[in-house]
Image (cartoon, rainbow, N blue to C red; front, side, top):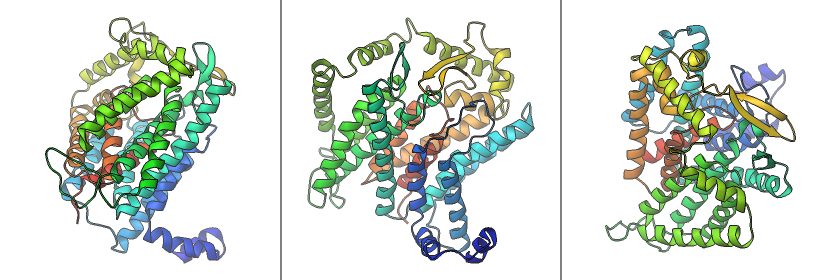
Length: 453
């Protein structure tokens, strides 16, 4: 390893690098945590139509994959179940078949590489890097840390009116990602909130005490009171930047994930959580007026998405119908990765908008093209056909059922994060700076779903 680095750098590795390499080999979860934290680094990317976006987080994830391959050669990888391997292999097979049968195989190659990176290579590397409870807590802690950074920036944007435009006012919290990646901050904050809440709940459940039907998780010795209180405080703080992100999709996904998390831990906590959440909303919105008009307006619009949808919701419905029409023309293996944007105009209804509006103090006003159906399941169906949707369904359902069966300690967070992803995929898909976080979540879920070796 030292010889390879010295050849690349033209000099012998520094002493600090010599010490770092064995540390990373022994604790590869450090790279997984770095992948999460590096998502916060601003990219300055303005061309959303570019074929390839490479961020610092992507480079860290690829370094994790390389380190996993290195450990594989050394025979130091933990045991991975055959079922998990088969699920990952099915996704690779579906993407490969779709690429070979694509309407434009050359342009689909980059899509194939991205799909394998997001849904196979990085999750498998994260799975192999989580060797014990400390590794899992390290990665979950990085989710909380990244969320606190982005949440603080987002809250400041709302309070100082320096965020993205919302109803003509620069109040939408977008963190360090900017208006062109409008969902990114709410995604990072959602992950951090769920990780913090799950870690807090995990501290109140003793690992050795068996579960009973009447009481799934009970307080007991062994939990850290300080950690539990700190995580509850982090979750409470993150609720505000999540609210002023004005992301209905993130709100819904967090609500479902928190419900699943509390039901899995102790059903009585769900009742307490609803009461405390309602009380906090009354104090913050009703008493202090924080985000009052925007949040209540946005909440009320959730109930009208079917009867009287706004333009963004109407466009999303049209994109879903467009994806369905594309799939009908290519039912078995789909049109190929990245083919949706090529076939959109020939299959979309005339009322579909050419793009969505984006504006903030940095970029001014721009139109962002609609290049995907904003639904991961419809995207897979249109681009990878029935073969693809079956492969992804097997992966997602396998991970979800595995997490439900073996939820202990940090596994609570894996269940909550995976639930968020699966719900969010109903009205969003991969793309943007935070895509690599989906890979880390899938890796955490795969570790939680894997029986102890």
